[in-house]
Structure formats: structure tokens, C-alpha cells
Image (tube, rainbow, N blue to C red):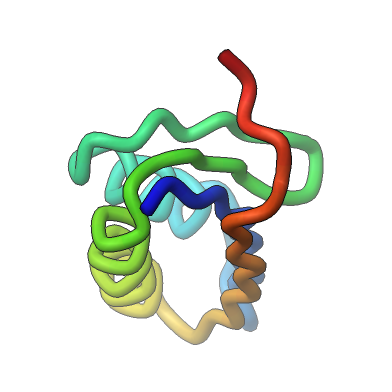
Length: 82
């Protein structure tokens, strides 16, 4: 099933925010998803199984850099651009 997800990662008690954010985006790309960064979150579209696998890896990579909070909204009803 095709789905979309909006992912936000919040590094806690870290000197730099960028490494955790980039780790999440790279994990999404490494799982075949096109990560579209926005000002507050990253958006992806793909097969639901690929999204959930990528999210697990993304969280592992980001949390490997320190404490993080990840919020995710997944939908199979949002409009999907052509």
C-alpha cells in the first residue's frame, strides 16, 4: 500500500542538531525513499513496509548520536503527487 509520512526528530541535550536530522534523512534515502526536508519535518512517500523499515533504522541511527524524540504521522489518505 502506498503511504506518506511526516517525520520530525528532536535531538535532546546535544550540542548540534544537524547530525541527528541528517542521520534520519539518510536512513530514509538508504531505504529507497525520497526524503523531502521541510522547515520542521521531513516528508516521504512510498510503500508502507519501506516506510516502517526506514523509520526503525532512522530512529536507531539518530538515537545512536544521543537522546532524541521522534514524532511520525503516517497516512494512506493524503493526496500523493504524480
